[in-house]
Image (cartoon, rainbow, N blue to C red; front, side, top):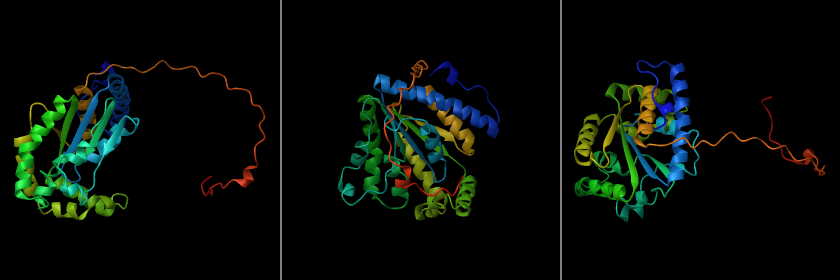
Length: 269
């Protein structure tokens, strides 16, 4: 972590401070990205938590200025019939990073310990098998050289309800309310028990769970990114500002008239 990425202040954060700190840390993420590419690191970051906990928001802020060829987001849908017959971890292995890449998983193999278990989409035997095999699988990843980072976004029942109701009112976010999300409102305690059981089995030394207090979205984003920047030591590889060479002289190539091109309408001028 470079010196400039250290948090400058603590305490309540207003929106102006949030924007300034977010932009500053996004600059550091660009530096981290360059370091990952330079050193050939393989990084996987798992984002888990209850529905509406803010996982997508922090992923969006992390990736906003990064190169999608280096940093990519994996958000898999429900498995298709063929994938349902595979080894459970198989379709996730396909998306693991090569050298010089960082993968952000918006939900992950932990679906089996959460929604699949709570909603009855897997059998009890499959669930118990996952709890036994997941620590082994993650230790294999770490031994292979992958840097595995796991975040759990934690919110209260009241805050989840407030965010659900906000999504109902907001047409930009209504698509986020799936039937599974609505069912989750009725199963708060079931999800709590599933999370506790998952932590008991999968909070391992090689890949521990890092819990993010996500009650406030803005501070959760800052705290998560700040923590991430502190987990992977990196140096600033930003190149010197290049001098733009003079533009070449025009050879006066004759151009066809623009009237022959299909310009889109311009209702905004």
